[in-house]
Image (tube, rainbow, N blue to C red; front, side):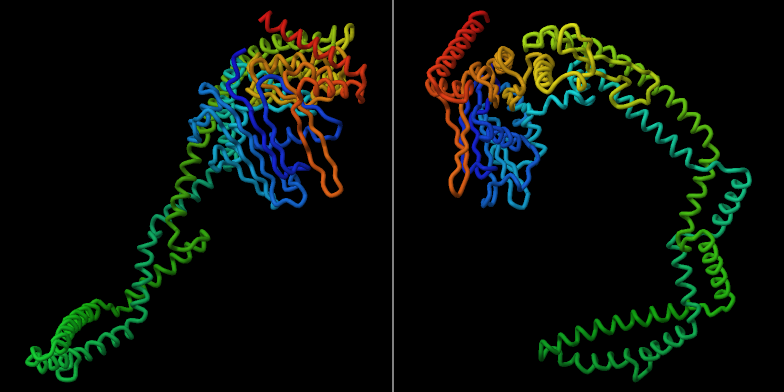
Length: 570
């Protein structure tokens, strides 16, 4: 396995659950996290999950605090996936990465990557390149079809075939939707077509554009009030044009009187300028009024013609349930409907032909996907079965069975049905996973599947939260060694209550819950060799004694020797 490309080096927790303040430094390799039942070991995993973009609520905040504050620091190498993600996102490209998240008492949360505020989705995307967390109930996911398909489709050959299936499925759905929309268009009988053509002709002869209709209405208003308008124009002209008392004449007289005094006072000069401009404006107003007077048409015939045209347009608007200025829109819609009816049969034929072609392409892609999945399923089944023998399920079998149905309704993930069959004991016929395996067996099967499916390609930091539940003895030792192999030259953390698992770790720290009169808090402690003997002894027998310490020392020595052998062999 390649050297670690990223590693969790520091986890800081403030005011989270029962933790007031906690700093945990972590090293490469396999680290066991132990402690009494109920001590709060899994709280560390929960905090890390939130830093990686998990859903957070105000209920995670320590009582009396305003907000929870979480920080994780990772060391990176320049060829790591996390380093590439950070560089592409413009969020620094150094050899360290710091994630922070605050969750407030109002339920709102904020996240940062290297000091820059980011979205929850960005935390999740980066988190996927850094850490993979396996919870206590992860084995339950293994019984769900979605997870089973994910195990197969993670293989490059399957992923490529799945992409082809999805591409054809999207196109197939588009054509199906187009056919459904076409079917909702009612077919037009010959009589309906004749009626629509009549309505089109009627609209073509009468409908006006909005601007033209507005002009007709304006002309009608002018003619309807023609007498009043003419009287107003004549009165205004009279005020402007009277020989002595008219506005224009009086302005001229005022200018004549003032001009000889213009040089005496700047204010007089300014008044003259204003009066001259006013005189010009009055002349322009007079010309406009004269033109308007000349244009007024008091013809009763013209008024009657406009009234008839407007009445006809309003009747036509009521007929089509629109305002008269929108009749041209109706005309456009009717033309489209008639044209669509003429080509409807051909369009339907074209769509049906396209649907048949894309369905054929989809089925071919789905069959290729099935073949790729079959190959992957056989390989995975063999590898998981082999691992089950190591995990204390001698004679146990694991089989991923695929069924291809070319007549099933197309879906985004192909035409396969999948079922996992297992036998936990020799001589027992395989049966459905969720009906045959016990909780402890499911945990081991899940771990075996995880190791086999990853094929040695794990996220840099693997976190296991009591995946060893329900096992013990030699099986527990096998689980511990398998977890150590998962760590490889990278990093694996495991919350465990089993001494046989803990002794396989390179490092170990304990979590202790301290309860006082007014508060409860969490404390962690990295164990040295002597302290580790005591902790393993406690995990073995629940108490410390000469015998339990001797047993613990023996287990630790045995695993140390085994690790040395593994290193020598590699």
